[in-house]
Image: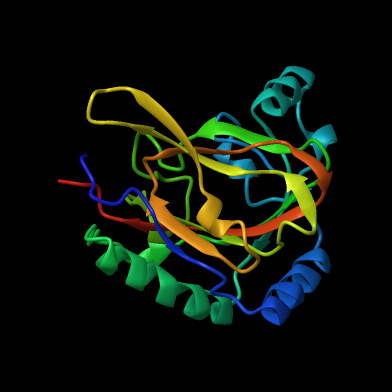
Length: 215
């Protein structure tokens, strides 16, 4: 899909005190090991740790992703974030149909933690193992909110991978969301990663919004 805008951002959109409160709220919940799509999806909304995975499963995971997460389902959080999602979807010209958002992921990237290149979307729509409101839907829009600024950590750059008009691969660090409280929205089929954190802790919120498969 050839897009005029590969992502849409809101610089320092969330007030600093709001970010601090979200970090405090997220840290008050029980965290779990972040997994990937290669691991049984039924496990994802359970609280799991390294001991819950087989040795090979854990080794493969750590090569692709290493972070800790908390799932948040508070309605006030959706109401707050959906404003930015609606605006980005319209202003970018994507105008994707969507009607549901998954649980919001509060993510911690501590020293040396990362998430290698990946897509948020899946090859097939959600199936019977998912909640009824997600069945038959696909991820269309992804959102990342940076809750910490560059004074709190080093490394941990959020990076996109695009294909230019000549078919060449271009990697681009999304510098627009480095300031605390900044938000980026992008189609869920775009490759991206979080590079290893080399100092401090990087906190973020991630949300995926789903709709009917593209036609």
